[in-house]
Length: 354
Image (cartoon, rainbow, N blue to C red; front, side, top):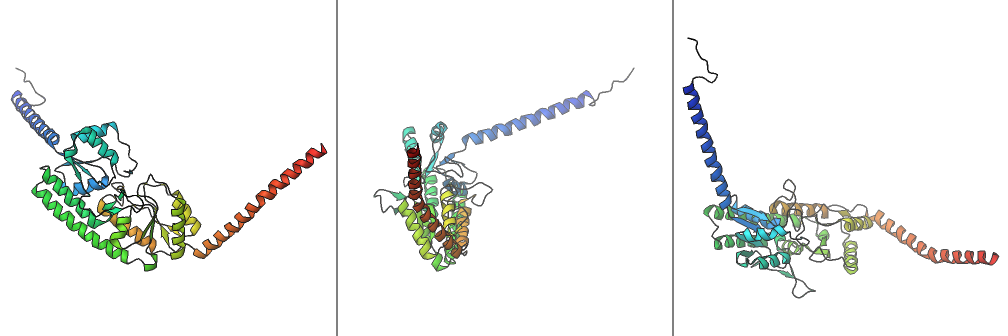
């Protein structure tokens, strides 16, 4: 009788193999379902800005899903909410906002959705800088002072406790992060003190560095108001130019979310350096020099110190160039009426001949 050969061996071995494969599939399905279940029950924190989201992420780790409304690199002053943002607000277990009128658009959405009880304002306890021109206006950029940012982090932990989202690991990460912020604050103080005394003036595009200036003893002169929606006034520009000339300033700066055209032209006209862009309202890309709040503050400080410590491009040359341009402009101004007069006389002569 002829023997029958099986490619996979005997029927008994194939039966055992099938059972093993079935068992493996069942185990994989159990793991997958458990993972999906864990993800579905994972709590969510919704943050208004990328800076706040980074602070929260450093505290909660991977235990809680941290999301941000305004993405990295985007300006919170100019953000326009999307229809999907309403659902994100509704689904969030905790909402962290800056306050001090930074996110008026978000506060309206929160009121409409009816989840105000889930909101934590992180500037509670912060010493705000109030506007000298507008009675009820305050500067929202308190995170630019690292000692005030520590208050943000403390308020995040309080909010987590109130919402029942804290844990032993979160408490431990909180203490570690506060220690890093304390070291960063001291580091910035030392770096700013290394700038030559006669060059300690920070001229930026919009008013986002007042807390930084107050904390680290660095006078600040912005060309426009607190919001990037404000327009540059000719008086503010004139005063800035006067201060640059008086101090023989080496460098001016622009924020990375603002068009640098005006500051670039100003630096060219006055023969001074335009520093590397500063980060004010949002973090940069994840692989950039301002990927986290700590990196952002360190990068800003290093760029400010480097820029203000450099010599001017060529003050004498720039002064001569400006003098030449002034003279040229004067003669051009005189030439206009003479040109018009010559044209009129020439035209009259042609009519007379006809």
